[in-house]
Amino acid sequence: MGPSEEDQIFEYLNLLVSRPEVRRALGENARRYVERECNWDLVATRYADFLKALHEGRPWPEPRPDAAPAIDGAMPESGRAHEQAIAPFGIEPPVPARAPEPEPEAVIEPEYIAGWAENPESRTYIETHTTRLVRTLEITPRGTALDRVLEMGAYLQITPALKTKLGYGEVRGCYYGEPGRVDRRSIVSADGETFECEIDHFNAEKDSFPYPDGHFATVLCCELIEHLFEDPMHLMSEINRILKPGGHLVLTTPNVISNRAISAILQGYHPGFFHAYIRPPKPGKEVEARHNREYSPREVHRLLENSGFVVALLETGEFRDEPHPEHGWVYHLLDRYSLSTDLRGDGIYAVGEKTGGVRERYPGWLYT
Image (cartoon, rainbow, N blue to C red; front, side, top):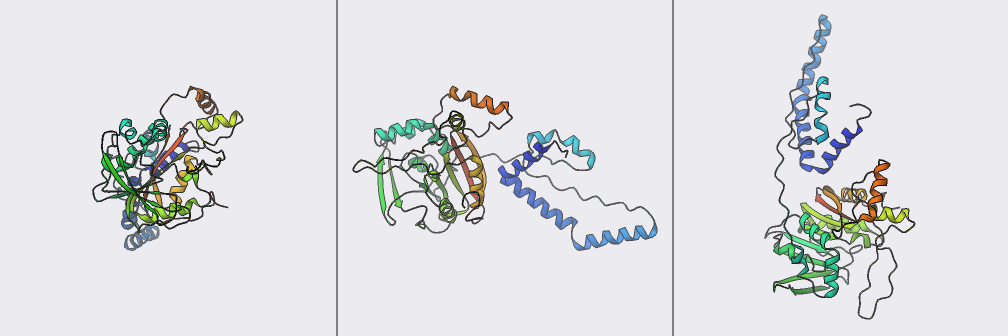
């Protein structure tokens, strides 16, 4: 690979990062290659043949390794044009195989979510965040009657759909509050559909979550991590603990490097999405939590990996799908200076698959 072809390296590494099945297949192929080509009997025989040829003064034909089986996954599109370039060097390009059909995303109508609004405030919030709420449900893996799912910071806006649209047998919620408190909530939709759910209370940065190890198939942590004050990895560690092996974390959070944020910085404003201090609440009202730290997509990727997850999906999008012509100049500026225009939406959407325990409790990029 030439010195100016770093994009090829990026494409292959990106494939390995984004496609766990390809990564596993590549590792399995490597293991089989080592077993086949690097065992002691074969290596000793080849050394003996080489020394014999050297002693007899004849050329030694270097044996060609057996062709490795194809990786079960598609090759990056930009890598296909590279096949002819690498073939003369005796490197066999990977043979693309048919990738498994992805599970179809759930079809969620915005009207269905809006039908669960309990009051005018909830209805206004849903209208403002319609695109985000729908997209969150679309990227959440489907469940079965035997699967459990936990929604953290549950407002019961998308919670019913986890059961009625995604098929989970047990749906549970949790919220900030006194440990041990459990609220039993029941709501009725505009269509007369009833949904019941238990909401556990605890401090996600300090308390042990009140669930056994490997209890849930999926955990949703949506628009929550940006509110944490001091120890986000406690939350991530506990999520890892309560997820079963191969379970999924669905994480959404505002994007601190969005087009909106860049526009704000370059015009002299703060880039944060909700960085203002909060006035004392009115009697009987909860204190709203400001954003203490917002994240970039790259940081979310690192956060998931540090926490024992492989990144199955990472994208950005809008809270509400509507035109933003006021940010067009930001796109042109980034393009003009060859800076990435990818992952610049207002919100980050990520799905991680649990592959093991927490890898780094206090990652250096997040703690000091």
